[in-house]
Amino acid sequence: MPKRRLTAPVALAALFLALTAPASAAAAGRTTDPTLPGPVFKTVTDKNALLSLQTFGRPDGKDMVFRISGSVYANIEGNALEPGLRHGQKLFGIEGYNIRRLYREPGTAKLYQLSREIVFYTDPADPTKILREWKNPVDLKTYPVVPINNDTVNFGPFDVTPSYAGPPTRQLHDETVWTSDIPVRTDFGSTLGEKFGLVGGVYAAQEMFDFFVDDREAAARAVPGKVPSGAMKTKIAWSRTSPWAPFMCLAESEVRGQLTYHARSWSLNSYADVEPWIRAEVDKNHPLYRSAPGAPGASENSWSSFHAKQLHKGATTWAGWCAANAR
Image (cartoon, rainbow, N blue to C red; front, side):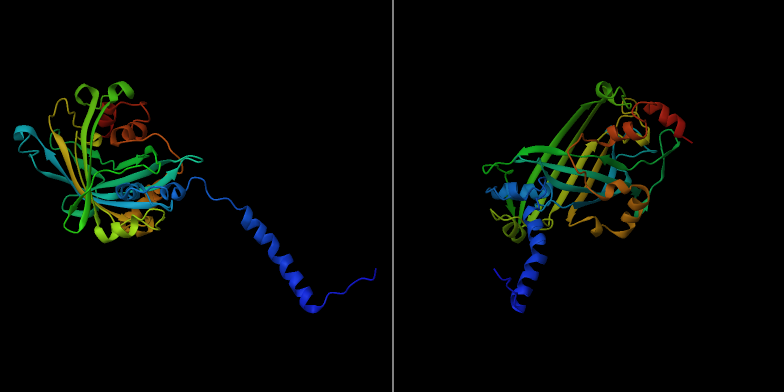
């Protein structure tokens, strides 16, 4: 049989197919990241669940930030430490953030909030001045200030089925509002072998959160079957009562009193949206906190973080650290 010659149009078409076929095949074979939460998020129908899940992380699976700004006050029964330390005295500002992502356990409908948080103690008169040391008004010694640097802070898994329901909400003016109050009790004397001067070695605190979302934002982002991009515009009011921070070297069992944290928080799309002065400090001294964790793991709070990083997991004691760092 004689060979057939390709005409110019046919030859060009063949060349186009030859060039595009490999790319098309590669695209067809590309797999979606199995940890992205979108396919699970799309199954949720309850409006409150759609809203609350978006405070755990972006439905598109990218990192988001909750910027944190507030103050820390002394809460002293009977004002017993006056005049050195007065009840109600503002001791510190706090400025920082929590960076988080919504993570899907591959092959399941289980979602996690994965996060890290870095919050700096600042001059009570200047919120942009990060404190490096603090003079204890009880023993008159000066100690290094250790920021809140918790790696990681995780919640979950949440079994997110189509019937998954969120917390009850209220309508206050033009906002949808809900609350989360968390009593915390951890026996560090037993779990870490370090009492930190806490009464009975037990850390007891109360964390209280109020969430606020504009009704127009809520209506736009709580649509069943849709996966919104970006972070939901959310405001949070946060309060915490807890023992003296470990770097303060005040034993709760001897110096009776507590700290009251009062702060507000607001969502940002990414780390790039955090103010430059905070990013400069993080980039220089805490680069781990520029992104959320990649997989579930154990959580920290200020005390377990201090135990891991300052006490080197028990290589030294809290009392020993205070003695070595006092001046």
